[in-house]
Image 1: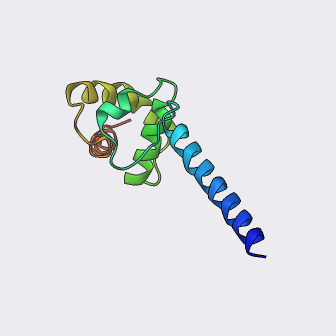
Image 2: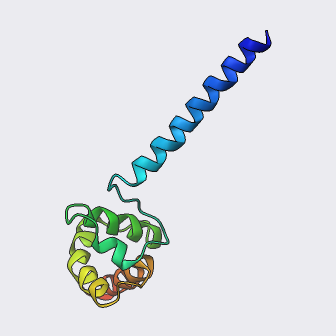
Length: 106
């Protein structure tokens, strides 16, 4: 009975180690994750096709009712802001741009 329990525990340890090892490989595979702590420099490393989606995610955090068309127009100004201040938090930059867009008449 004890041998059987050790075999199960050994298999469990291998399975857990495999999941942890895959998680580490997953994060180093080039996939980037969006988080509130993200900097402008992090944002600039995203593919251009993903940038509108990232901006939309942050803008929805600041203004839950923002339209995709509005956030699509924010991409170019935010890229320029981020090039000027790569260490700045992206959330702050998106929030400021969201306010600027809301104040601009359509």
